[in-house]
Length: 294
Image (cartoon, rainbow, N blue to C red; front, side):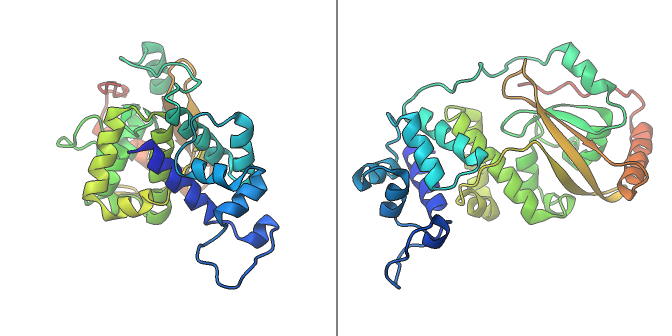
């Protein structure tokens, strides 16, 4: 993954999404050869010279000030995730480390695993930015049972299962939304951690083996993933749609705890209780799976 090409394609893809009318600019000429805004129109909106913006879009973000980056982000109407991604790309171009603590390495602290284990009514797991599941409680393992087969590679990786396992499409019934979310999270992580060789290897594997991943990856979409709803087609309890909340672990930089829940007296809550009953019969230990490494 080249930082310069990532910058070029990201800025061009955001520019293509905005029409002159949306940007408050007159649409001169009836035969526009590019979708969305032209480079010179972005330059006008950002208050920089055309030559300078062209240089930025060619991947030369190193040395761009925060004011310039903010102006470009405003001109392109970037959301919070896209704006953060632009700053990550600028840091990568300048070979400056991201302004955040060093990423967690080594085993997860026992205190964190005890918290995960105590969540007996909510499926929950801890993942890194590559979407490796590093630890999971009993109900979470039951929910993601198709990923935890005996022959599955370790660490279990959500993206690898989704795109390379034949059961992935059936397990995620809202396929298009699920694909876009997964790829956007990996694209976001690629901007934050351009030197992560494990991430580069995973993306290379997925690009090589999955046409659907290649198509979604080329869109350069990014996102912040804090809360929402996710649908599953579980082999035992059937379709279940749960609310989720994803929380960063401040003492474990780069790691996220995701927990699922359902409102009482709903079909999803009933399905979750059925899943808990099935999980109890499958594994009487109740202990968190803490076999994964960072």
